[in-house]
Image (cartoon, rainbow, N blue to C red; front, top):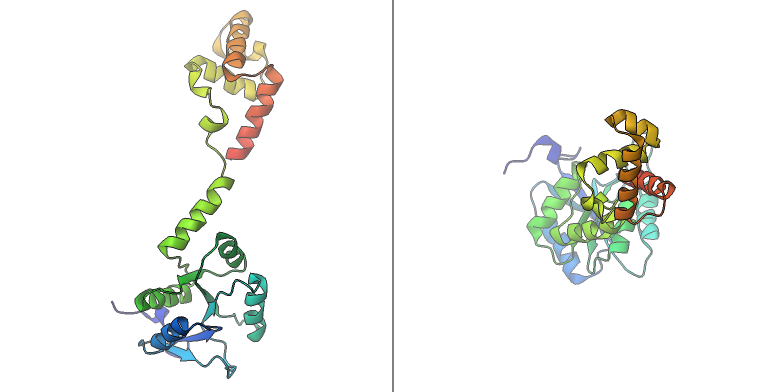
Length: 226
C-alpha cells in the first residue's frame, strides 16, 4: 500500500525515538523498525537536537505514568509553534489503570511488547497522523473499563417500566415534568378522578411510595441519560 505525504515527517521520513526500551525483545523490535522504509530510528542517548516525530516509550510498572511522560516532555520542550513527539507506549502487562493514566497524559498509541513488526509500523504511521492506535486486547480493556461508568439504560433504572400501559407511560412522563393531576387531565381530556387512578397504579407498579419520590427518581434518570 503506497504511503502519502501525510505518512512522512518534515525530514522525508518519520523520525522515531526508542526511549527506555530496556527489554531485549523491545530493543530488537525498535532496531527492526529502523530498517523499515520511511522510518528512521534516532539514538536514544545522544539527545537529538530536533524533536522526534514519534517516541516509543516502554511501560515500566514501577514508574508512575505521570513521571514517565513528564520525563519525555521535559526532554523535548515545546517551543513557539513546536509540538512534542507523538507517544506510543509499549506495554508488557497492560493494566487498565495505567492505560487510562496514559490516555489522560495525551498518549494515543499503544502496542504490546510482543507485537509483530508490521503492527508497530502501522502504529507509528497512524499516531504520526494524529490518530489513535489501540490493539484489540487493549481496546477491549478500555471498553470494559468505561462500561461501569456509563449511564444505565432506562430499563435498568426502572426495572418495572415495562409493566406500565401506554397511557400510564404518557401520564408518567407528564408527572416527571411536574404537571398536576388537573393539568394531566386537561391534556388527555380525562377526569381528575381517572388521572388519580392512573397515578396510583403507576406508583404501585414502580414501587414508589408517593408522587414526589417518582418525580425525583425520574429527574435523576433524565440527568443521567442526557
